[in-house]
Image 1 (cartoon, rainbow, N blue to C red):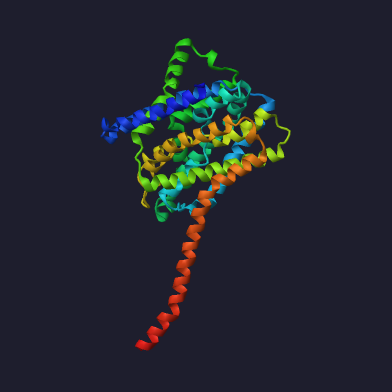
Image 2 (cartoon, rainbow, N blue to C red):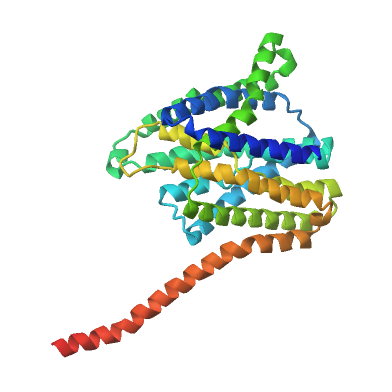
Length: 380
């Protein structure tokens, strides 16, 4: 059994173990304690080490920009498509999906397979591209989540809040987040020419051991918190198919304009956008949920977010294994285009069915108008 498949099975087993442990942790406070450990200790340690390992190269500087551009394009496309798939952006579920789906988690879902199938050079390129993705998921999505939070307050109450006070509050929230603090520290070290080896040995050991907890504790937490709901599972699968189809379409477009790419980089262009949904947006919506509740109702649906995270990893894993096991077949624009079409069939059928239902309802209403008019005239 190859290494990539072994890692995949290990990830799935951890999630199953967490799911089986739900009976042991019946109190939601227990889950909240685990979440605090993840958000305040494990994730900051992981991102601190990841930033300190970055080596800037002029040839690779374009990759973060392209990845960030892909995230932004994903966001604006999903903003238009989610209402067609039953998730209005004025609801907690719609905002949750719009926050989660444009994000990528290549470190957890993509990097192990890239290393196994494509080698160290491809892994270095993927890690560099992930810098742009990190900017999007850590900063842009956080500001977006906070913006939605403030919009949920009563408009009159918000108008009375001083703009400077709101900005000060937002800045204080950003600075109090452990993740943001370690990002600032890591960037400061890199600016001074320091890296991980510049830290004292005992500190390196501590941070490395905390970061090593990242994958198992997050996967166990997802398994512990996930709640299977048949109707929700169907909707999530529909949106994951849409997300994957859009990613294949982006890849086909990139391969069309990048015909000079070598086969390894071409396969990476297809695999990287298929990464699972990132855990960071869930961290942001969890931070928002700990703030005072707004008058207009909850901003996000935390249970829905956890289910999306739980289903996204195995779904993305299957897609990436399919692509990588096919060698360079998907490195051709036509192959990625057909894959995009195949993934978009189910979401498209759902949209067409909804449009057909609305048309039928409108036609029935129009047909009833003459009958109601005649009935009214007869009764008079």
